[in-house]
Length: 276
Image 1: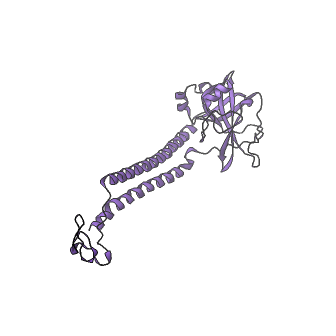
Image 2: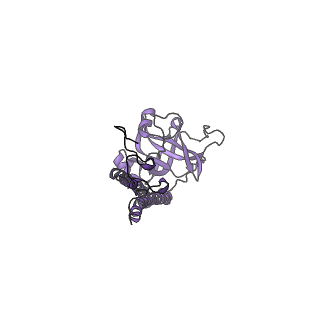
Image 3: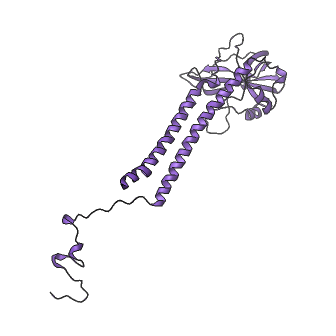
């Protein structure tokens, strides 16, 4: 058949524009080329992601170890200062730096409870039970007070907002306790808290709210008054849960090791084995 101008030549068997040697293997199945390795940019992204993951998990593990060490150091300070005589009330710190030097010292204070400003700190536990820490200012002199963590009381299981009756005697009282920092904080969503039940207690905001001049510390009451007010005072030792922090640190370090191992296997070892 004559070719028309502009039309490609047709080979026998219906093949166009090629030679018999260009035909694919029998059945139309060609030989698949080797799979290309990921591009250099992609490998760099994977490397940076692995390094970031290892860095974050290692830093979290070190942070848990530092928390454990901090609690152990605090326990050592408590043990050392437990044998010292009680701090005289007149020497109770008025500045933050002085308060740090007095932490864990025993003290006996004389003053009057400011019962109308009693606060119940929610979601606090003692012996694994949920309840409240009861905090009441103790007025040492007119307008000058210190926060006293008086003890723990269980929460009403049926009505969590029902406040327990805590006897707070009027008149001059004597409080034997241990100097501590401000009441421990739990996670909250910010904002200013008010009312008798609170998640946390910020001493500076509480001082503005009550008009009291508060010392830059608090006192954990150790000895029950007479008559007993029903509060529990088995304050946990700082180093009691150090094992928990060690366990968390081990988990973070294990995650770092797993991420590093996966990167080495999939990005270095496995490609090298395939290349052989």
